[in-house]
Length: 367
Image 1 (cartoon, one colour):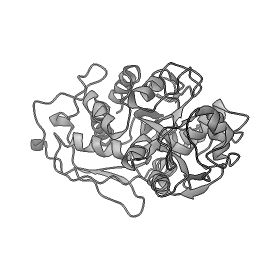
Image 2 (spheres, rainbow, N blue to C red):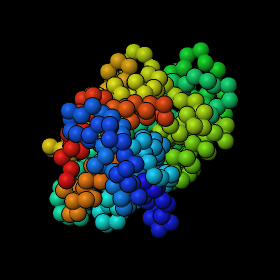
Image 3 (cartoon, rainbow, N blue to C red):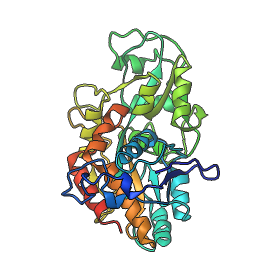
């Protein structure tokens, strides 16, 4: 498998030269919901040729790990994942330029129509990566910070401008907060992370965040490109704050705010606390279209509410059967129990059992 960088579209290229002899004969099959969840592919699932995909930056580190795991049995390749963002990924998929796309939001009706037309069959949203969104900050002398949705909304709208604002003090009794100016950074590119973060703000604090959630930022601050850009900016700026996936917060060693959800105890962001929020999500798609409706206002004890799910956007039935088989093989490995567990150390939450079972069934139905 060879992963190449495309200067034209920045696509993920999952490329073969995967001789069947490179695949171990003692590995489990890709199976359906009853599979054992092995990360490795069966001998018949290794393929030759190129499988292009593109999209979400939130899942960059996760899909790189999934590629490495797939290589355990289909080994002939280095890997290089170049994420371009959810919106470009969907555009490339609906344009027929890639075989699947990564998106931090399920397809909207117009996107679903375009994708289905391209596929010649219904397009499915398959949740694959649970990526908690951290509210990260860099304030000298402040190692612990509690925020709620209303205060976050006011900070990101520019209504709260210093770290010693009374509204922040009220949530952090006993803490010494400096008068340092707050410096907001946001994603300048169209971003599924932005859309999910603003869905949270709009749902839980609608009077303070009135803008319609969207991939394009509607608040205040200074724009930086992609998750890496905003995380780096905060790391370099005293008083900085942004929203970014947990993996980027960890890579940049940034402090993360706890969230007061109204459940009684502020919730710290961990893989476990994010998984609790994903577990209570409801399916909004039909059949094997597994679009989820997240409950951003959940007061489930210990559930961290600011989460996103990255979907792999696929054709339910590919016009080329070999392409369908190859997409199915890779995603089966991606969804396996062992690969999902391996993502935890990278700042992701493994799919809860309730979701993972449906995901494996949907992948098994791809043709």
